[in-house]
Image (cartoon, rainbow, N blue to C red):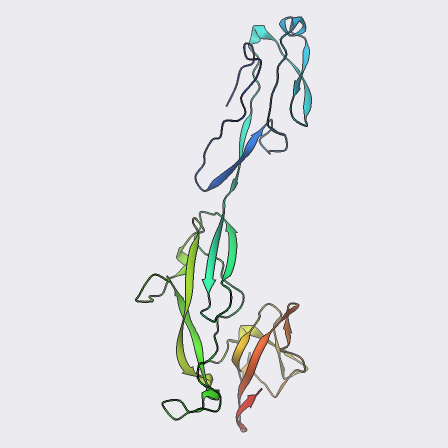
Length: 254
């Protein structure tokens, strides 16, 4: 927009341009958007007609500029935009409020996901027997994938192929497994004091978890004291820790 001010006492800066996936911030005197204006007033007097110096008045901004009607001087206002923020909702199907992640629009695919591994309470009491005769204590719901909540087939949605270009919602899909069939990846842990296992601070875990017997080839012999209570300053809500310790059988720690 290049408004000429030779015959306009006021320049209209209320025009709202549009850019896909962006929000309009305002008109600015510079491309960086540091001089946003919401009004522009030009006073026509002899000084201007003679090519003198005048002041352009904005809401909270004023700048001395030189105007020469013979050269038809132009003031350029730049449209300033910012990417629109879209919300991605993740329903863990655990009876808790839906987790929402807000992400600015970007053209490259890949949606941000919760840092917490999805989990939900097992619907059979620890002391009750399941259909296969196993105690409920040793069963859990293992997170399988994210699905569209409106898809009756509950098909897997590949979030890495989607861009944050709209508000989206997903629901967690689980499978019923033995806790010993759901050993957590080594990335969630670290070794301290030679062979003790400690939870990495980048992750928050909930419910029943099963820890590996070794990390990077080092056999785990013990669990670090208070090593699973907090992660990155956040409280973990771990209810059970299972460990297939070599030579000692299966260990369940409440």
